Image (cartoon, rainbow, N blue to C red; front, side, top):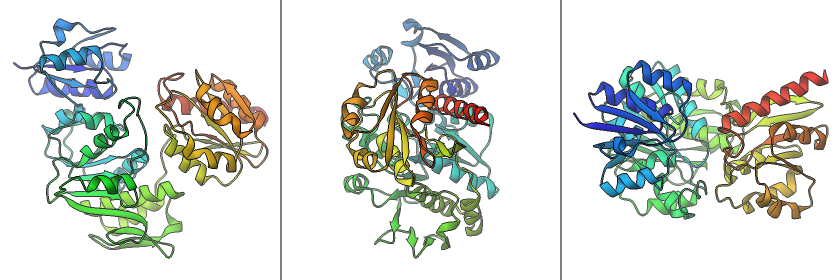
Length: 448
Protein backbone atom coordinates (compact mmCIF):
# COMPACT_ATOMS: atom_id res chain seq x y z
CA UNK A 1 0.00 0.00 0.00
CA UNK A 2 1.45 3.37 -1.04
CA UNK A 3 1.84 5.99 1.68
CA UNK A 4 0.43 9.50 1.27
CA UNK A 5 1.41 12.23 3.72
CA UNK A 6 -0.62 15.41 3.79
CA UNK A 7 1.05 18.57 5.09
CA UNK A 8 -1.45 21.07 6.48
CA UNK A 9 -4.69 20.38 8.31
CA UNK A 10 -7.02 23.02 6.90
CA UNK A 11 -9.74 22.68 4.25
CA UNK A 12 -7.32 21.66 1.52
CA UNK A 13 -5.37 19.16 3.62
CA UNK A 14 -8.36 17.52 5.22
CA UNK A 15 -10.07 17.02 1.87
CA UNK A 16 -6.93 15.54 0.34
CA UNK A 17 -6.62 13.10 3.25
CA UNK A 18 -10.22 11.94 2.82
CA UNK A 19 -9.77 11.33 -0.91
CA UNK A 20 -6.45 9.52 -0.38
CA UNK A 21 -8.02 7.25 2.21
CA UNK A 22 -10.98 6.50 -0.06
CA UNK A 23 -8.57 5.53 -2.84
CA UNK A 24 -6.85 3.00 -0.61
CA UNK A 25 -3.68 4.83 0.44
CA UNK A 26 -2.02 4.65 3.84
CA UNK A 27 -2.67 8.23 4.95
CA UNK A 28 -1.07 10.46 7.57
CA UNK A 29 -1.71 14.19 8.05
CA UNK A 30 0.70 16.54 9.81
CA UNK A 31 0.41 20.22 10.70
CA UNK A 32 3.12 22.30 12.38
CA UNK A 33 0.44 24.55 13.89
CA UNK A 34 -2.82 23.78 15.65
CA UNK A 35 -5.54 22.11 13.62
CA UNK A 36 -8.96 23.72 13.95
CA UNK A 37 -11.39 21.72 16.12
CA UNK A 38 -13.71 21.34 13.13
CA UNK A 39 -11.05 19.52 11.11
CA UNK A 40 -9.81 17.48 14.09
CA UNK A 41 -13.31 16.11 14.51
CA UNK A 42 -13.68 15.36 10.81
CA UNK A 43 -10.30 13.60 10.64
CA UNK A 44 -11.30 11.44 13.58
CA UNK A 45 -14.66 10.65 12.02
CA UNK A 46 -12.84 9.35 8.93
CA UNK A 47 -10.29 7.49 11.12
CA UNK A 48 -7.37 9.34 9.55
CA UNK A 49 -4.13 9.46 11.53
CA UNK A 50 -2.96 12.99 12.24
CA UNK A 51 -0.72 15.20 14.35
CA UNK A 52 -0.38 18.90 14.99
CA UNK A 53 2.01 21.18 16.86
CA UNK A 54 5.01 19.92 14.88
CA UNK A 55 6.19 17.39 12.30
CA UNK A 56 7.39 13.89 13.24
CA UNK A 57 10.00 13.36 10.55
CA UNK A 58 10.10 9.57 10.56
CA UNK A 59 6.33 9.54 9.87
CA UNK A 60 6.68 11.99 6.98
CA UNK A 61 9.95 11.28 5.20
CA UNK A 62 8.84 7.70 4.45
CA UNK A 63 6.04 8.98 2.19
CA UNK A 64 5.70 7.82 -1.40
CA UNK A 65 4.04 11.14 -2.20
CA UNK A 66 3.23 14.31 -0.27
CA UNK A 67 0.25 16.58 -0.74
CA UNK A 68 1.26 20.04 0.45
CA UNK A 69 -1.25 22.70 1.43
CA UNK A 70 -0.73 25.92 -0.55
CA UNK A 71 0.06 28.04 2.50
CA UNK A 72 3.24 26.08 3.24
CA UNK A 73 6.25 27.60 1.45
CA UNK A 74 8.73 25.39 -0.40
CA UNK A 75 11.44 26.70 1.95
CA UNK A 76 9.81 25.11 5.01
CA UNK A 77 12.39 22.75 6.62
CA UNK A 78 10.25 19.61 6.30
CA UNK A 79 9.57 20.41 2.61
CA UNK A 80 13.27 20.90 1.95
CA UNK A 81 14.05 17.52 3.51
CA UNK A 82 11.39 15.85 1.37
CA UNK A 83 12.84 17.49 -1.73
CA UNK A 84 16.32 16.28 -0.80
CA UNK A 85 14.95 12.74 -0.62
CA UNK A 86 13.30 13.12 -4.01
CA UNK A 87 9.75 12.63 -2.70
CA UNK A 88 7.06 13.85 -5.08
CA UNK A 89 5.25 16.92 -3.69
CA UNK A 90 1.95 17.93 -5.25
CA UNK A 91 -1.07 20.12 -4.48
CA UNK A 92 -4.51 19.01 -3.39
CA UNK A 93 -5.87 20.19 -6.76
CA UNK A 94 -3.33 18.08 -8.64
CA UNK A 95 -4.24 15.02 -6.56
CA UNK A 96 -7.99 15.50 -6.94
CA UNK A 97 -7.71 15.94 -10.69
CA UNK A 98 -6.48 12.37 -11.05
CA UNK A 99 -9.79 10.96 -9.86
CA UNK A 100 -12.45 12.86 -11.79
CA UNK A 101 -13.48 13.27 -15.41
CA UNK A 102 -15.37 16.48 -14.66
CA UNK A 103 -14.77 19.56 -16.79
CA UNK A 104 -12.58 22.11 -15.01
CA UNK A 105 -13.24 25.85 -15.26
CA UNK A 106 -10.24 27.43 -13.53
CA UNK A 107 -9.72 31.07 -12.60
CA UNK A 108 -6.55 32.84 -11.54
CA UNK A 109 -5.16 36.37 -11.53
CA UNK A 110 -3.78 38.86 -9.05
CA UNK A 111 -7.21 40.46 -8.55
CA UNK A 112 -10.83 39.55 -9.18
CA UNK A 113 -10.48 35.77 -8.78
CA UNK A 114 -13.13 35.29 -6.13
CA UNK A 115 -15.69 37.57 -7.76
CA UNK A 116 -15.24 35.94 -11.17
CA UNK A 117 -15.28 32.43 -9.74
CA UNK A 118 -18.44 33.14 -7.76
CA UNK A 119 -20.12 34.72 -10.78
CA UNK A 120 -19.31 31.80 -13.10
CA UNK A 121 -20.58 29.35 -10.49
CA UNK A 122 -23.76 31.41 -10.10
CA UNK A 123 -24.34 31.30 -13.86
CA UNK A 124 -23.72 27.55 -14.21
CA UNK A 125 -25.80 26.73 -11.14
CA UNK A 126 -28.69 28.89 -12.37
CA UNK A 127 -28.47 27.19 -15.77
CA UNK A 128 -29.01 23.82 -14.08
CA UNK A 129 -25.49 22.46 -14.44
CA UNK A 130 -24.28 19.78 -12.01
CA UNK A 131 -21.43 21.95 -10.73
CA UNK A 132 -19.16 22.24 -7.70
CA UNK A 133 -17.30 25.28 -6.36
CA UNK A 134 -13.75 24.71 -5.15
CA UNK A 135 -10.20 25.99 -4.66
CA UNK A 136 -9.71 29.12 -2.60
CA UNK A 137 -13.47 29.37 -2.28
CA UNK A 138 -16.01 26.71 -1.35
CA UNK A 139 -15.16 23.23 -0.16
CA UNK A 140 -12.02 21.28 -0.89
CA UNK A 141 -11.94 19.96 -4.46
CA UNK A 142 -10.49 16.67 -3.20
CA UNK A 143 -13.30 16.21 -0.71
CA UNK A 144 -15.92 16.89 -3.37
CA UNK A 145 -14.27 14.39 -5.72
CA UNK A 146 -14.32 11.85 -2.88
CA UNK A 147 -17.92 12.36 -1.81
CA UNK A 148 -19.78 14.05 -4.72
CA UNK A 149 -20.22 13.40 -8.44
CA UNK A 150 -20.16 16.75 -10.25
CA UNK A 151 -19.87 17.15 -14.00
CA UNK A 152 -18.19 20.58 -13.72
CA UNK A 153 -16.02 22.33 -11.19
CA UNK A 154 -15.44 26.06 -11.02
CA UNK A 155 -12.11 26.49 -9.24
CA UNK A 156 -10.35 29.59 -7.92
CA UNK A 157 -6.60 29.00 -8.09
CA UNK A 158 -3.94 30.99 -6.28
CA UNK A 159 -0.34 31.11 -7.46
CA UNK A 160 0.55 28.89 -4.49
CA UNK A 161 -1.82 26.17 -5.71
CA UNK A 162 -0.54 26.44 -9.26
CA UNK A 163 3.05 25.95 -8.08
CA UNK A 164 2.50 22.27 -7.28
CA UNK A 165 0.26 21.37 -10.21
CA UNK A 166 1.87 19.34 -12.99
CA UNK A 167 -0.57 17.13 -14.93
CA UNK A 168 -3.80 18.91 -13.98
CA UNK A 169 -5.70 20.26 -16.98
CA UNK A 170 -8.00 23.27 -17.10
CA UNK A 171 -10.64 22.87 -19.80
CA UNK A 172 -11.41 26.57 -19.53
CA UNK A 173 -8.52 28.59 -18.10
CA UNK A 174 -9.19 32.20 -17.10
CA UNK A 175 -6.31 34.60 -16.40
CA UNK A 176 -7.69 37.95 -15.29
CA UNK A 177 -4.52 39.99 -14.77
CA UNK A 178 -0.99 39.83 -13.42
CA UNK A 179 0.22 42.57 -11.07
CA UNK A 180 2.79 42.46 -8.24
CA UNK A 181 1.64 40.25 -5.36
CA UNK A 182 3.14 37.72 -2.96
CA UNK A 183 6.65 38.79 -3.95
CA UNK A 184 7.80 37.91 -0.44
CA UNK A 185 6.99 34.30 -1.34
CA UNK A 186 8.77 34.46 -4.71
CA UNK A 187 12.17 35.75 -3.62
CA UNK A 188 11.22 39.30 -4.53
CA UNK A 189 11.31 38.31 -8.21
CA UNK A 190 8.28 39.33 -10.24
CA UNK A 191 9.10 36.84 -13.00
CA UNK A 192 8.81 33.94 -10.56
CA UNK A 193 5.32 35.08 -9.69
CA UNK A 194 4.43 35.55 -13.37
CA UNK A 195 5.68 32.05 -14.20
CA UNK A 196 3.45 30.68 -11.47
CA UNK A 197 0.34 32.37 -12.87
CA UNK A 198 1.07 31.20 -16.41
CA UNK A 199 0.99 27.58 -15.25
CA UNK A 200 -2.79 27.68 -15.59
CA UNK A 201 -2.46 27.03 -19.34
CA UNK A 202 -0.11 24.06 -19.04
CA UNK A 203 -1.60 20.81 -20.39
CA UNK A 204 -4.42 22.56 -22.29
CA UNK A 205 -5.46 20.87 -25.54
CA UNK A 206 -6.95 22.23 -28.80
CA UNK A 207 -10.52 21.67 -27.60
CA UNK A 208 -9.86 23.76 -24.45
CA UNK A 209 -10.15 27.54 -24.12
CA UNK A 210 -7.94 30.24 -22.66
CA UNK A 211 -9.81 33.37 -21.55
CA UNK A 212 -7.62 36.36 -20.69
CA UNK A 213 -7.52 40.14 -20.46
CA UNK A 214 -6.11 41.41 -23.76
CA UNK A 215 -5.08 44.77 -22.27
CA UNK A 216 -2.80 43.32 -19.59
CA UNK A 217 0.78 44.17 -20.69
CA UNK A 218 2.38 41.32 -18.75
CA UNK A 219 0.03 38.68 -20.15
CA UNK A 220 0.53 40.00 -23.69
CA UNK A 221 4.30 39.78 -23.29
CA UNK A 222 4.23 36.32 -21.73
CA UNK A 223 1.97 34.78 -24.38
CA UNK A 224 4.75 35.20 -26.93
CA UNK A 225 6.82 32.68 -24.97
CA UNK A 226 4.26 29.88 -25.11
CA UNK A 227 3.11 27.57 -27.88
CA UNK A 228 -0.49 27.64 -26.71
CA UNK A 229 -2.63 24.80 -28.07
CA UNK A 230 -5.99 25.94 -26.73
CA UNK A 231 -8.42 28.38 -28.31
CA UNK A 232 -7.58 32.00 -27.41
CA UNK A 233 -10.57 33.97 -26.11
CA UNK A 234 -9.42 37.45 -25.05
CA UNK A 235 -11.66 40.17 -23.64
CA UNK A 236 -11.01 43.91 -23.46
CA UNK A 237 -12.62 47.10 -22.21
CA UNK A 238 -13.31 48.33 -25.74
CA UNK A 239 -13.45 46.43 -29.03
CA UNK A 240 -9.96 45.60 -30.26
CA UNK A 241 -8.49 43.33 -32.87
CA UNK A 242 -8.75 39.79 -31.55
CA UNK A 243 -11.04 40.42 -28.56
CA UNK A 244 -14.28 38.47 -28.45
CA UNK A 245 -15.90 40.41 -25.58
CA UNK A 246 -15.90 44.14 -24.84
CA UNK A 247 -17.98 47.27 -24.29
CA UNK A 248 -19.28 49.25 -27.24
CA UNK A 249 -21.69 52.20 -27.21
CA UNK A 250 -22.87 51.41 -23.70
CA UNK A 251 -23.42 47.75 -24.55
CA UNK A 252 -21.87 44.64 -23.04
CA UNK A 253 -21.08 42.39 -26.00
CA UNK A 254 -19.76 38.88 -26.52
CA UNK A 255 -19.13 37.69 -30.08
CA UNK A 256 -18.27 34.04 -29.63
CA UNK A 257 -19.35 31.25 -29.56
CA UNK A 258 -22.91 32.63 -29.27
CA UNK A 259 -23.50 36.40 -29.61
CA UNK A 260 -24.67 38.13 -26.41
CA UNK A 261 -25.67 41.77 -26.10
CA UNK A 262 -26.99 43.66 -23.08
CA UNK A 263 -26.95 47.15 -21.60
CA UNK A 264 -23.83 47.89 -19.56
CA UNK A 265 -25.93 49.77 -17.00
CA UNK A 266 -27.87 46.62 -16.21
CA UNK A 267 -24.76 44.77 -14.97
CA UNK A 268 -25.04 44.04 -11.26
CA UNK A 269 -21.33 44.67 -10.64
CA UNK A 270 -20.22 48.28 -11.02
CA UNK A 271 -16.73 49.74 -11.53
CA UNK A 272 -14.03 49.04 -14.09
CA UNK A 273 -12.50 46.11 -12.21
CA UNK A 274 -15.90 44.44 -11.95
CA UNK A 275 -16.49 45.01 -15.66
CA UNK A 276 -13.48 42.81 -16.42
CA UNK A 277 -14.81 40.14 -14.08
CA UNK A 278 -18.23 40.26 -15.77
CA UNK A 279 -16.66 39.97 -19.23
CA UNK A 280 -14.50 37.01 -18.19
CA UNK A 281 -17.44 35.26 -16.54
CA UNK A 282 -19.77 35.82 -19.49
CA UNK A 283 -17.24 34.51 -22.00
CA UNK A 284 -16.46 31.46 -19.87
CA UNK A 285 -20.10 30.52 -19.32
CA UNK A 286 -20.74 31.02 -23.04
CA UNK A 287 -17.90 28.64 -23.89
CA UNK A 288 -19.31 26.02 -21.54
CA UNK A 289 -22.62 26.24 -23.37
CA UNK A 290 -24.90 28.29 -21.13
CA UNK A 291 -27.66 30.06 -23.05
CA UNK A 292 -27.32 33.79 -23.57
CA UNK A 293 -30.53 34.73 -21.76
CA UNK A 294 -29.38 32.90 -18.62
CA UNK A 295 -25.98 34.60 -18.73
CA UNK A 296 -27.64 38.01 -19.05
CA UNK A 297 -30.04 37.26 -16.20
CA UNK A 298 -27.19 36.21 -13.91
CA UNK A 299 -25.03 39.20 -14.81
CA UNK A 300 -27.93 41.37 -13.69
CA UNK A 301 -28.94 39.60 -10.46
CA UNK A 302 -25.54 38.58 -9.01
CA UNK A 303 -25.26 39.80 -5.41
CA UNK A 304 -21.47 40.17 -5.20
CA UNK A 305 -19.21 38.61 -2.58
CA UNK A 306 -18.30 39.33 0.99
CA UNK A 307 -15.21 41.52 1.58
CA UNK A 308 -15.03 42.84 -1.99
CA UNK A 309 -16.29 46.46 -2.17
CA UNK A 310 -19.05 45.45 0.24
CA UNK A 311 -21.23 48.36 1.31
CA UNK A 312 -21.70 47.92 5.05
CA UNK A 313 -23.70 50.82 6.47
CA UNK A 314 -23.99 54.61 6.51
CA UNK A 315 -23.17 56.25 9.86
CA UNK A 316 -23.53 60.03 10.29
CA UNK A 317 -23.78 60.37 6.50
CA UNK A 318 -20.50 58.48 6.01
CA UNK A 319 -20.52 55.28 3.92
CA UNK A 320 -18.38 52.41 5.23
CA UNK A 321 -17.09 49.90 2.64
CA UNK A 322 -15.43 46.57 3.44
CA UNK A 323 -12.82 45.69 0.80
CA UNK A 324 -10.73 43.44 3.03
CA UNK A 325 -9.95 41.17 0.06
CA UNK A 326 -7.79 43.97 -1.35
CA UNK A 327 -4.53 42.39 -0.21
CA UNK A 328 -2.35 43.99 -2.87
CA UNK A 329 -1.79 47.48 -4.26
CA UNK A 330 -3.55 46.89 -7.57
CA UNK A 331 -6.78 45.86 -5.82
CA UNK A 332 -6.68 49.02 -3.73
CA UNK A 333 -6.13 51.05 -6.89
CA UNK A 334 -9.37 49.80 -8.45
CA UNK A 335 -11.25 50.31 -5.20
CA UNK A 336 -10.10 53.92 -4.91
CA UNK A 337 -10.83 54.54 -8.56
CA UNK A 338 -14.44 53.42 -8.16
CA UNK A 339 -15.26 55.64 -5.16
CA UNK A 340 -16.46 59.12 -6.11
CA UNK A 341 -16.60 60.81 -2.68
CA UNK A 342 -13.65 61.86 -0.45
CA UNK A 343 -12.09 58.78 1.17
CA UNK A 344 -10.74 57.90 4.59
CA UNK A 345 -8.56 54.98 3.56
CA UNK A 346 -7.52 52.13 5.86
CA UNK A 347 -4.15 50.66 4.88
CA UNK A 348 -1.83 48.14 6.46
CA UNK A 349 -1.13 44.60 7.56
CA UNK A 350 1.54 42.13 6.54
CA UNK A 351 3.41 43.75 3.65
CA UNK A 352 4.13 41.49 0.66
CA UNK A 353 6.86 43.55 -0.96
CA UNK A 354 4.42 46.29 -1.96
CA UNK A 355 5.30 49.25 -4.16
CA UNK A 356 2.82 51.99 -3.23
CA UNK A 357 3.75 54.33 -6.09
CA UNK A 358 0.89 52.88 -8.12
CA UNK A 359 -1.71 54.44 -5.79
CA UNK A 360 0.21 57.56 -4.76
CA UNK A 361 -1.60 59.98 -7.08
CA UNK A 362 -5.00 58.46 -6.34
CA UNK A 363 -4.37 58.79 -2.61
CA UNK A 364 -3.38 62.45 -3.09
CA UNK A 365 -6.44 63.18 -5.21
CA UNK A 366 -9.12 61.18 -3.42
CA UNK A 367 -8.20 60.70 0.23
CA UNK A 368 -9.15 63.01 3.07
CA UNK A 369 -7.16 60.99 5.60
CA UNK A 370 -5.27 57.74 6.09
CA UNK A 371 -5.65 55.25 8.92
CA UNK A 372 -2.88 52.69 9.30
CA UNK A 373 -3.88 49.29 10.72
CA UNK A 374 -0.98 46.96 11.42
CA UNK A 375 1.52 45.56 13.86
CA UNK A 376 4.26 47.57 12.13
CA UNK A 377 3.23 50.64 10.13
CA UNK A 378 6.69 52.09 9.51
CA UNK A 379 6.70 51.45 5.75
CA UNK A 380 3.35 53.22 5.42
CA UNK A 381 4.58 56.19 7.44
CA UNK A 382 7.74 56.41 5.35
CA UNK A 383 5.81 56.43 2.07
CA UNK A 384 2.55 58.26 2.74
CA UNK A 385 3.20 60.73 5.55
CA UNK A 386 4.96 63.09 3.16
CA UNK A 387 1.69 63.64 1.28
CA UNK A 388 0.53 65.90 4.10
CA UNK A 389 -2.75 64.07 4.76
CA UNK A 390 -4.08 63.57 8.29
CA UNK A 391 -2.87 60.19 9.55
CA UNK A 392 -3.89 57.88 12.41
CA UNK A 393 -1.74 54.99 13.59
CA UNK A 394 -3.60 51.94 14.99
CA UNK A 395 -2.83 48.32 15.81
CA UNK A 396 -6.33 46.97 16.41
CA UNK A 397 -9.67 47.22 14.64
CA UNK A 398 -11.53 49.02 17.43
CA UNK A 399 -9.05 51.91 17.44
CA UNK A 400 -9.02 51.89 13.64
CA UNK A 401 -12.79 52.29 13.33
CA UNK A 402 -12.81 54.98 16.03
CA UNK A 403 -10.11 56.91 14.15
CA UNK A 404 -12.08 56.66 10.90
CA UNK A 405 -15.20 57.99 12.61
CA UNK A 406 -13.20 60.91 13.98
CA UNK A 407 -11.54 61.80 10.67
CA UNK A 408 -14.47 61.35 8.27
CA UNK A 409 -16.83 64.16 7.35
CA UNK A 410 -20.45 63.93 6.14
CA UNK A 411 -20.54 62.69 2.55
CA UNK A 412 -17.23 60.81 2.85
CA UNK A 413 -16.50 57.12 2.36
CA UNK A 414 -14.46 55.06 4.81
CA UNK A 415 -12.75 52.37 2.74
CA UNK A 416 -11.04 49.32 4.22
CA UNK A 417 -8.79 48.39 1.29
CA UNK A 418 -5.55 47.50 3.06
CA UNK A 419 -3.11 46.54 0.25
CA UNK A 420 -1.67 43.96 2.64
CA UNK A 421 -2.25 40.49 4.00
CA UNK A 422 -4.03 40.26 7.34
CA UNK A 423 -1.89 37.77 9.22
CA UNK A 424 -0.10 40.25 11.50
CA UNK A 425 -3.27 40.99 13.49
CA UNK A 426 -5.94 38.58 12.20
CA UNK A 427 -6.29 34.93 11.27
CA UNK A 428 -7.26 35.87 7.72
CA UNK A 429 -8.74 38.66 5.62
CA UNK A 430 -12.25 37.35 6.37
CA UNK A 431 -11.82 37.90 10.09
CA UNK A 432 -10.46 41.38 9.40
CA UNK A 433 -13.46 42.25 7.25
CA UNK A 434 -16.05 40.80 9.62
CA UNK A 435 -14.55 42.58 12.62
CA UNK A 436 -14.64 45.85 10.69
CA UNK A 437 -18.30 45.30 9.79
CA UNK A 438 -19.29 44.33 13.33
CA UNK A 439 -17.69 47.42 14.88
CA UNK A 440 -19.16 49.77 12.28
CA UNK A 441 -22.63 48.31 12.77
CA UNK A 442 -22.29 48.65 16.54
CA UNK A 443 -21.32 52.27 16.05
CA UNK A 444 -24.38 52.76 13.86
CA UNK A 445 -26.65 51.40 16.61
CA UNK A 446 -25.02 53.76 19.09
CA UNK A 447 -25.82 56.80 16.98
CA UNK A 448 -29.54 56.08 16.73
